[in-house]
Length: 334
Image 1 (cartoon, rainbow, N blue to C red):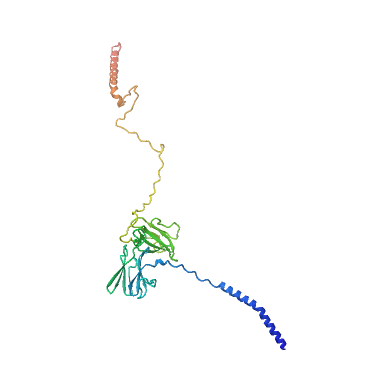
Image 2: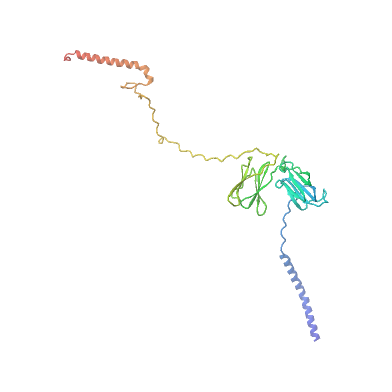
């Protein structure tokens, strides 16, 4: 019996030794498949341009800094919480509590009354008022955009357009601009300018800057619905002290259709003009004789009137002479 038990145990050990490599291979294969089938991580969105939020930080009290900017977006002051121990040179890209711009000139944060003064000029200033005392912080000098800089850009007016688009209207020294934005994704779509004022026919919506080179351009656009399918909107004004880089010029009026020229009249279709009649109609006769009652042309009257008169007298006297001769003939008397 012991011999049989030993034989069974030896057989089991042998079977385990033989099956171990196969089991290891199967486990490895299973692990590999599981790792391959694991869901991929979501794509990481690209980082926002960090320069969009950088600027000149100034400590305004109450654990706050104002990050002052004056770039393509216009004058801005980003109010960030940094703590009471902050000092110039320290990191300042912390939580944003408020933002001042041309579209939002005043804010109150931690008891501080903040105002962006002269926001529509080329020299904006941030004022901070606390307990009746006011301090001023000039914004940096604008850069780019010629000698006027980005400070000479108006605030932005946003409109809802047809085709799921938004339109950001603003005015620059180079003229009106409309940045079209996809309303669903927030991505920039296309841009309309003074020199390229309209979307092509068949685009996602209808939008066109009317009179783009004039003093009062307007955006004509298809609405997303409602009572009116088409609306117009004025562009915001250029900041005070700024000037345009071009001379105003209105669009030429639409050409009026000209009338189709009529066919030239032909001789058969034009009635002949009646001949002018004069008092005592004159008939021109040949020079060889003069009919009774006929009148000679004016150019012949002076030269021939006397001759005709003499001929008439001769005829009269000839007739009288013939009558006298007949009376004297015999038998002529009664």
